[in-house]
Amino acid sequence: MILLQAVTDSLQKLAAGPNGEAAKQINLWQLVAQGGVLMIPLAVLLAAAIYFFIERLIAIRKASRIESNFMNIIRDNIVSGNLSAARNLAKNTDHPVARIIDKGIQRIGKPIDAIEKSMENVGRLEMYKMERNVNILSTIAGMAPKFGFLGTIIGMIQLFFSINATGKFELNTIAGGIYVKMITSATGLIIGLLAYVGYQYLNAQIEKTANKMESASADFLDMLQEPHK
Image (tube, rainbow, N blue to C red; front, side, top):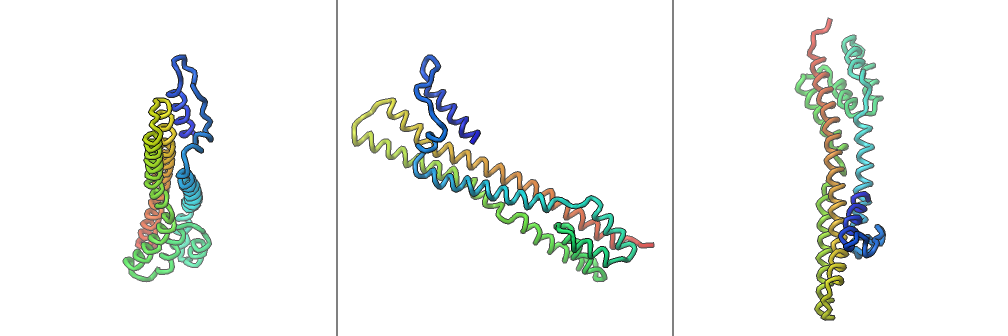
């Protein structure tokens, strides 16, 4: 909305006369309403982008939080041979890292390659859970500007058809009609930009969590191969 208000302010300045006074004040909601029927799917895309961004952000942040001493406790239990305590801790911790470690603990006694493969399978599943619905934001980022341009094209066709039918070719009428028809383009670009930024931000957060998962997996495998006293 801030970006849309900036667009509105720019349009007001462009419409201002020589004395700097606006020929006509434009209210934000009135401006949006003039965008036509294609503002409805754009509004739906905006609502979807906001919903999926917030939903994924909450899920990813939850997945990224884990006790800093989790791996230290796991290490102490494994070194002391208390596998049941290590398993209980991992099983009762709601976090991707804990689920990966839990799978590793279950496979202790098998070859390292088999343990690593089992943990990788769990890691891929956890990545899928985090990445689920994130691509919807990428889709919205691509769709919204196209809907906006479509609205502008339809509006321009209507404008020139009206000029052709009435024969009225006044500069004020044409200029007013053109900027109104460009509302959908501006709105579509803004929604697309917001969705794209949200998509990139979520991917960055997923990458951070993925690094934690990889680091914990490597530490666990190293732990199993360390000589124990």
